[in-house]
Length: 167
Image 1 (cartoon, rainbow, N blue to C red):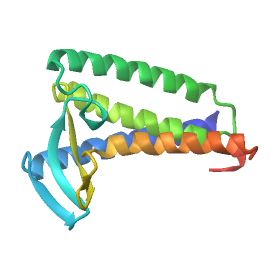
Image 2 (image 1 turned 60 degrees about the horizontal axis):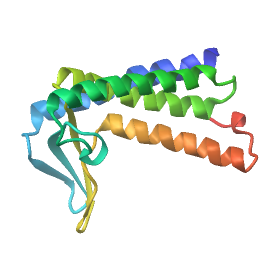
Image 3 (image 1 turned 90 degrees about the horizontal axis):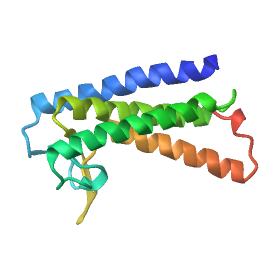
Image 4 (image 1 turned 60 degrees about the vertical axis):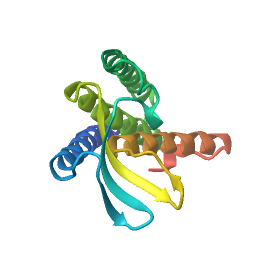
């Protein structure tokens, strides 16, 4: 149990702090709607506000509804993921890491939504030729990394590999 807390607490603190600090840096240093090429033809820093979910889902909904909807759903997600983290048996470090990253990302975006009137700041912009990935932020990255670790846990369990020996 102690080992899970040693994973969760630093990930929550560092993850949320890094997410909020990078968003604040963008707010202070990158003009709204602008692009700063970092790796030409591949990666830009941008400054956009997203009131929707992934890929702008629900962005056309009323701002008041979106704000309440995402605060409630994020609270539910945090409760469910927190419960799953709590129920993990000792030694499930990779799964604990995955859940911790998801909680840190969800909390970072929740704080952003509460203090930015229902919107999150997105600034990481990857593209390749005419293919363009929607802008995202550190919190989104943490959520995706956490989900990736959980997929890895599932795949390893299906193959019969003992995941308690990893991470």
